[in-house]
Length: 87
Image (cartoon, rainbow, N blue to C red; front, side, top):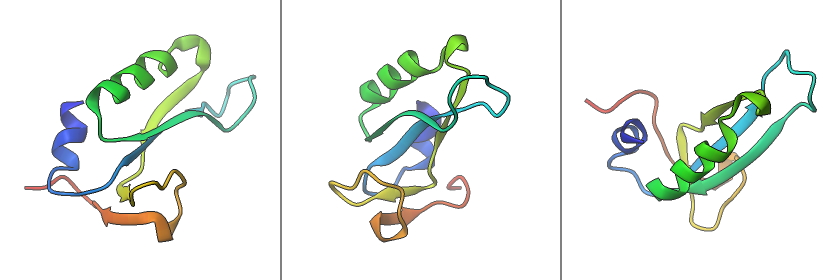
């Protein structure tokens, strides 16, 4: 969680974090769940529930933060875009 805190430091808006099924999984494809938050405890809970071998997915985050109330990864919902770690 320290990485996300550092990466999104100085920005506003929620961070979209999701589980995406591994390409070679025999389970249904696509997103396995998501959370849109800046709350470290909510992120930890999501990761603990979704980052399991039997889920056959990876955990990803968008590099843009979202406007208040937004829950979809659309350009018009973005506030801040990070291209690299702040120095």
